[in-house]
Structures are given as structure tokens and as C-alpha cells.
Image (cartoon, rainbow, N blue to C red; front, side):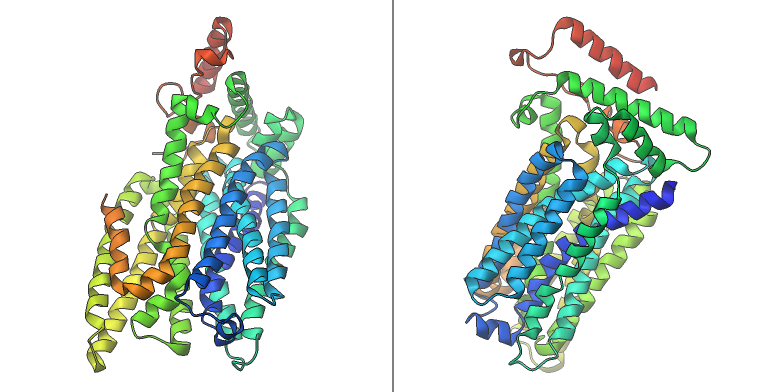
Length: 487
């Protein structure tokens, strides 16, 4: 099967990332529905709308942390399945909502599920991928499918908005559409294998070797498969020798603490670009630019197409060539300049009229589109690739859960709640918050080789007071590490 099956697995697993994008994007269309606003007696720039989005993000915090347990206990594949099942429940509650409470509970469940999926899908993809295609065609699919989820949510919402204002179809159908990818993911994930690294960790070497052949065998690379198998086996043996239970170990071992900090910070700075605020509240942003009605929803639909196109080009042709650090530096500078320009345009549009106002509106739309393009060629794909690559197996589940839960979703929750109020009250000045924050290499290697790039000892040195290692075991561990380097 080899590469075709490997890519098929990655694309199918990325259905979980599609749900991430769809669930995140659908509310920007829903809150533009007059029937929705009337039904729940609210407005787009109120705290109620903020609560609808922040409960989603808040649920994702707990979902991400839960994933740290489920990924280690039941595996990567079953964590994806659990996330899809929870999302199905949340989608049903939102679709049939008769009051605000049902919407909020449904959004909590949807967020809980997306939290699970957002940290488990990249790891599942990364651990199943061949090293020479991991970033460009495998883990990079995470951001690609998030973008496609945004696209689909927008155009489903745009089509649904064409019904009379008295019909709740305009918002119930977009919310109910989530059930389709949930059902596909639940039904299909059972036909795909567990991660070979997880199987090896659970002392199932024969099954792990079988999965590696299914994923990476091309008909003549038996030696490569056996070498990869030995490399995984040796690394896991070394890590098991120093693994201690619990979450505190991630903060105790210096090398692991450094990795955890880097993975968490990359998620925090991704949120601080303001990209999700644009995704959630683009309706308000375009209204501030003088774009209203169907034109508003149409512009959102086009906006959501641009990012995924740029992302696909970047992950396919450039990501593995330019590495990880340079695009992040480019993204920080580029997004900062674009947001400054957006704020300047916003300051001028309030008193403008006629053709000048139209020109300023077009310029404002351009710079919001530019933010999406720059993000899609920097923080978007790299935040998932980088975090999944640098986390050692011993803490991969818990570490990714912490980084995604606190770095991504907790920050997201805060912005989800305050952004509609901020955009309504201070309009263009709100962008300067992100500007202020924005002003403040792992390439084509196996996960085990990446493990050895970090200083000190990549596997970590446990403190003596944990009483986990003796002198003889320490010498043995160094020997295993040497074998990994030379294998």
C-alpha cells in the first residue's frame, strides 16, 4: 500500500481538522442570520455572541487536556473516534436548540470534541507518516483541512441565508451540517490502523511492524522498514527507562520543559496573530468597513478560500525547504504590518463618503485577506508541524494536550469573549492589541532523529530525587542513545 495508503490515512484523519475549521467558522455566518438574532434576542456585538464562541473555545481547553489521558490510555485512533462522537452530540444539540442554553451546551460539546481532535489528529498523522513527507503532505494537512472547514461553513451558510428571514433554516442547517463529517469520521476511523509508535509503546512490536509495512512499504524497501522499526524500538526503550507517571514530570526534566515551553508558546503566538478573531467576527469587521448584507457574507466566503489555497501551495512546495523558523519570523513581521495598515484604514473610513469610502473599504478587505495569506504561509501550518515534531514520545500525549489546551484554546477563549465587545466599542483601535503582541529547525528528519537535536540529552535527565534511575541504568541508557544515533 505504501505512500498511497499513508496519504489516505492522513487525509481521512484530517476530517477531524475539517470539523475544527467548520465549527470555528460556522458561527460567523450564523450570527449574521436575522432569524438567529431575533430567535435569541441578541445582536452580533453583544456579550451573548461572545459567550457562544467562548464556550466553544472553553470546551476545547478541557477537550485538549482530556486528550492527554485518552491518547496514552486508548491510543491515537480511539481518541479521534471519541472526539467525533462528542462532536455529533454537540451538533445535534445546536441544530435543535430551542433556547440559548441548548446552544451554549451544544457549543461546549463541540468545543470539547474539537479540543480532542485538534491535538490528536496532528500526532496521529505525524506518527504514521514517512519522514520525507511528514511536514509537507501529512501534518500540513491539518491546517489545510481547517481552512477547508472554514470554506465549507461559509458557503453552506451563504446558501442557507437565501431563505426568507422568517425561516430558521438559515442557521439550523449550517449547524446541522456538522453531523455529516462526524458520521463519516466515526464510521471510517475503524478501518485505519493505530499509530505504530503507540503500538510499540504498548509492547505490540509485531503489530507495529505490520502497520509500518502497510504505511511505508513500496515493494523494495524492506531494509528501510526494518531500520525504521529498530529506530522506533530503541528510542521507546530508552524513553521508557526514564519515564515517570504524571504530568509534573514535563516541568521537572529541563529538556522536556524546554520542549513543552516551545510547543506552548508557538500556539500562544499563533492565537496572538488575531487570525481566529478575524475568523469568528469577520461579520463585524466588514460592517465596520461599510460592507453589509449579502455582500458581507460573500466577502467572508471569498476570504475563507484564500487562506487554504496559500496554505496548500506552501506546505506542498516550500515548507520542507525553508524550515520552520524563517517563516515564523516572516509571519510575525508581515502580519504586524498588515494589521497596522488595517487600523490606519479603519481610522479614515468613519468620516469617508462616496467613492473614497468604497476605495477604503476595498483596501480594508485587502489587508484582512493579506493577514490570512501570510498566516497560511507561516503560523498556520507550522504551529501544528513544529509542536508535533519536537515532543518526545514519553510526554507526547500529555505535552501536546497542555500546549494545545492552554496555548491555543485558553487564549482563544479569552479573545472569543472580549472581541465582539472590543470591535463594537473601539473598532479599528482593537487591531493595535495584536500589533503590540506581534512586535514583542526541524526539517525532513524522523521523529527519533529530531529527538536527538535538542541539547543536553534529548531524552531528558530525570532529577535524582525521583529515584527512577541508578548508575547502571544510566550507563545502559547512554548506550541505547548511542545506538539510536548510529542506526
